[in-house]
Image (cartoon, rainbow, N blue to C red; front, side, top):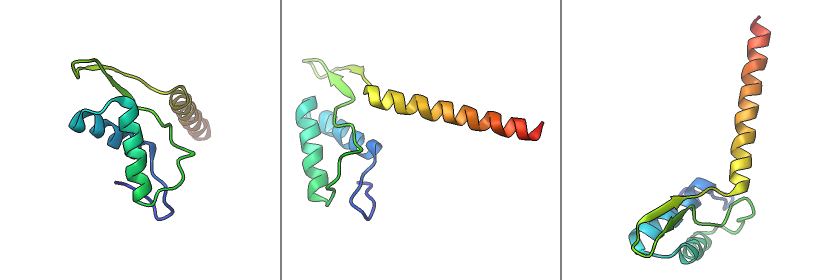
Length: 97
């Protein structure tokens, strides 16, 4: 479990544990999220304010991966990061011209 010395985890670490709970232990989305929270709390993580608390993978009743879904906040953050990168790249091009 990736964790900083301040008791914070990344969204990627949280999502990985949730996905493992669903795939390896056949937990439903809600149970997988709750179990991940419990695991991280026991490891000393106390601040989840920056984490999107949801399962990104849904399964049908047969356990088949139904869809991958993204949280709207995650989508917005990714879009912003892409825009900032493009802007930064353009600024670098302008300075070299």
